[in-house]
Image 1 (tube, helix red, strand yellow):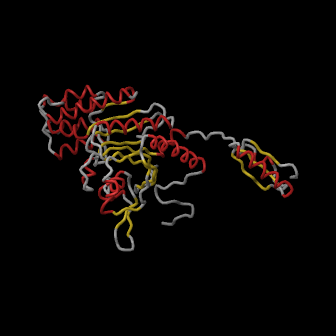
Image 2 (cartoon, helix red, strand yellow):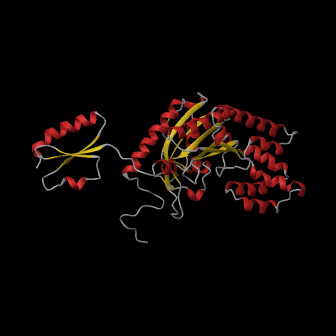
Image 3 (cartoon, helix red, strand yellow):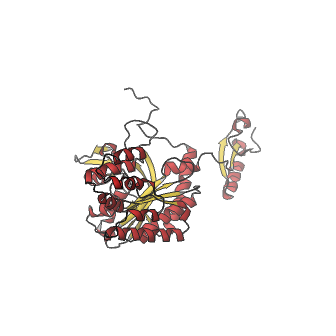
Length: 385
């Protein structure tokens, strides 16, 4: 294979000036809301040990970028942010300060086998609330994600909420073993309703309950979940009551029309152990982000604490908010040797007024017309030919 000079590694992208500018604006807006909510921003290393973060991250092994350090240890480019932040929270410094609220804006890496339009490097913005196992923590991160989207002016934001543990208990009530449940989860993650119904006909489910089982994929309100709750199962009832309380909190915060409660919703991120959710917005057919509770992940770092959070995909947010470049007030000042001082003084004055100004040395052969359409205003200083 011959690599051309202009080619990039599979899945990598260049950010041209307009996109780079919009990313900077998005970062400033989003992280300001995160910090106002009491979260401290942090940055983790781009490289992590495979034996810790690589294996724990829940990202498929073949999607990890791996390399060796000078000591022969296998490293990975960080595939997500939740696992590295969990590692940091397990340190002595933060362990004694629970709960902790940490926010981030960082790039992550996922290797691609073929281009297919999928990026191998992209930025995520999000938070992790570690040390709080209450439903109020779950409500807090969902409301914060909602507020970030409002700040970014994402239209028609929607959340799909499910509960991994409650779903697991209900599937067990249908008499399914762990292998069968895994197959059901796979159809839920891929949102393959046809495949789910086909699978339902193959599973050892009582004929009288088959229609009820297929109905798992058709819920939109918490109240609909009631029909699958075993009144004699204390754990199911406890989790269901938590979901009803969560709904009241979210409704009170103005999210009642923005949430679908889908009992079949499940995440491909295997470390989620409780409430899970995805975020959508008008203008994109893909999820803008996801989040949920991952208490099980913390146990792998020796912490018996609750943890919840969310991450938003910056590239997908940009697809919605950056479709058309904005016309900005950008002035070009042309000058020559005779007008140099005047040009620099004028540029300084305009910049102090908040105007974007570019200075360009322009001999007589450089015509003003050359810049028409590129700038909102073009000035040639007196004294230039």
